[in-house]
Image 1 (tube, rainbow, N blue to C red):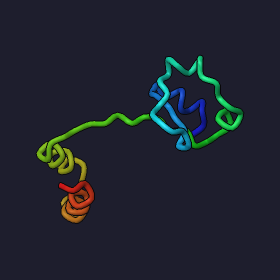
Image 2: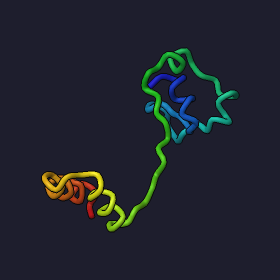
Image 3: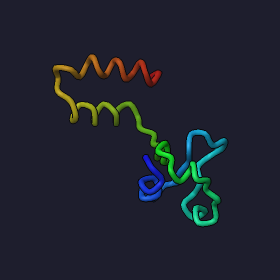
Image 4: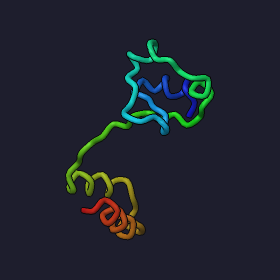
Length: 83
């Protein structure tokens, strides 16, 4: 995403090449962006981290999928998440 899209998210932003964390939006006006930063399309927005229980996941999953593919995808997710 470009800088405008990242800023429009309302969340802290960063570029992958930056060392360190995300730049809070309240600090953007005082930050010295390079021309490369202004033109870049690799901006990232900080994602909200959440924690759910297995039972919460199971309930949401059963509402969102069909019985046909539920088991295979569920097993893959459990393996990927290390649960």
